[in-house]
Length: 403
Image 1: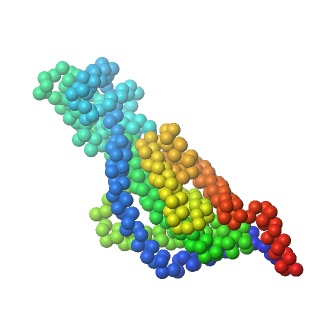
Image 2 (image 1 turned 120 degrees about the horizontal axis):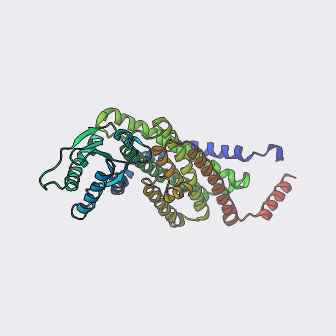
Image 3 (image 1 turned 120 degrees about the vertical axis):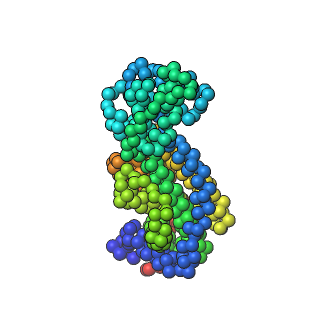
């Protein structure tokens, strides 16, 4: 065969992808595989404990004091006096001497205040959303009474000034959406990525992979298999989403509603699809490498266990960084390839900036290419036993045969 008729890398990958896609999609096993999401529900229930912990950390105790200097100092002193007896239910005061209206202080980006106390010690005013007013009305009254030296049984009247929302309330709501997005992404990837491994091991046992590797570059085989499995995964997700939509129509408003993410639902869903694709390709390329090194199913199970445990660890890394956007932990989770899709999806729920996502997707795409090249090279060296000399001998043998 001449070089002019030889398939390019992407053409060969497309041939492999089309072959695997049709073979898996129209098999009986794929139908039963669609029933798989029932089992991760158990994992989701167990993960609820971690989610509750993150949610508790997301609730802020910061309360701004927009009072005179003397009254603010008295409130802080009274708070410190009562803290050893009362404990965690008391707010953490921060003096705000900007002179802005309380409602504007609550909406200030990055302030993260749950409420604002203004007025005087005798007539304090509490500006916050309704739920935060119910939460802080009693503690603020107790602190104000202690600061003014009133009788322990005499509390000042709290003038409530409810607002629609605050920066802290919006942050807490978006953290819930970020949590849900991360958990769904993790469950889908863990459920679907295993198909890559099982497919490669089956073809190794049937010697199909050796025929493919002799005909086209190993990089093309790996790429084709990855994108075929990604396509099959999207088919499965579409089926599950359709079923979920039917359940949503039947249940109506009885289902819990997630708060709108910072980028809005259309962009958040688009980024969710992109990060699922990148995360699947990254994890799938690792599974292909493992499948290439393993000779038996038992070896596959032994080698894949560390990768599965590592995936759990990187998920917990990204989940723990939700409440600390911009911190070193969150940046590390966004930079590490395997945790980057989870961390960046959470950022899409919390931040309106778009450029970090373009940078993250480019970085993840580069890592996919590197992982595939490394896996294909390892497969050729350890399994096919074909270095440059081996390839040259095959080429010479092929030419002799043609002659």
